[in-house]
Image (cartoon, rainbow, N blue to C red; front, side):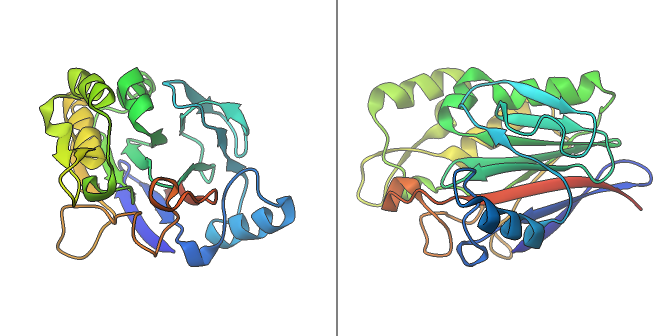
Length: 232
């Protein structure tokens, strides 16, 4: 488990936890009793988990555990101790903290094209969050993310050519962290940081054995990123 925190205005902080392979499988389709134990280990309390659809829908959570199982790729709340979660196995998890608010985003390439990051910023600002701080969780690095030309052109048309990269063997690749960072900058993020190695500006690469990876190993298991708002 990796622990991080983000500022969320006067008197508030956002707590973030990122699971690792050794913490268990957080796929919403895994054994319910095993999943419940894993969730309690990572963050005790009522979770809002999502049926992720690679779209741009954002749900507003008005009580701990509310909107659980909603078909969406992001959630936002101003409720204290409401645990927001996303599941990933190469896609990016993104936590957003504003004044008395927290949001979490499942950001795969399709969701980025659909505009899920900007949509989540819009909801936070509609609820009064002006300064937004972002934290990018572990996701696949371009060295392992071979990508077709047509789909890469589609992402680049939305985000910009910063997403164009190469794999370790020279094939076309998508730079997912660059795509997320660019979208956050476009939305006017106040600060941007990553869950990664010390003194690195890059997030941990889920192609490594520390994480589950669907793209490189075809794994069906998932790690989770969770975030919740606390009073300080």
